[in-house]
Length: 146
Image (cartoon, rainbow, N blue to C red):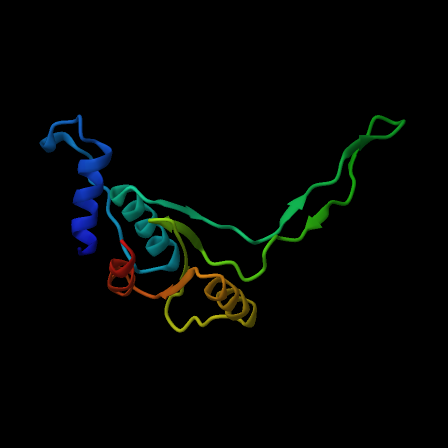
């Protein structure tokens, strides 16, 4: 399946009650890691398997806003909360009862040491860890698990 075929299949699946000539056409791309991740999630919806984006980055919790006796408002310092699961893959999927973690890399991007360790843990546990750089790369690898 090409990325253009994905767009057509996605439109047919998500808007099946709308006449074909009126259906919105979503476009997919693999020109960035974010675009490729969106395309993979859409493919999962078409094929009816579970897939979700995983986020491991931290977040900032702003400090409280207080009012002093003069009525002036002041923002107290916030706190950075670290992320959970350093090294997690970008996408977690479940196909036919098998856990598949998909790491999306773009250009010359490489796995970091934490990601290599996470990959080894997944594979030791019987899961699958895929590293994909393009749509064709993803499609060739995922065919074995559908």
